[in-house]
Amino acid sequence: MEHSQETDFFRAFDAKSFGAALRSARKERELTQQELGAIIRASRHTIVRLERGENVALETAIAAARALERDIALIPRFSRLDVKR
Image (tube, rainbow, N blue to C red):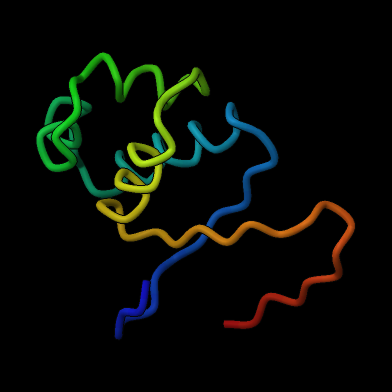
């Protein structure tokens, strides 16, 4: 998805760390789980499961990251990557 503004990024190695990163981003934006759920049209229970690293639809995880103004890049585990800001 193309967009004009730069967004923050976070590093997650598994579903649990991804959920923790989303929780942190949600709190930075001062949103409740209920409010984030309303933005992405998901229940509060779904947001709880996402933040715990439990199974949710991929579309839900992507929608939450975008609503929190984060980008997702999938990088193979043993790839070399230089992140520049």
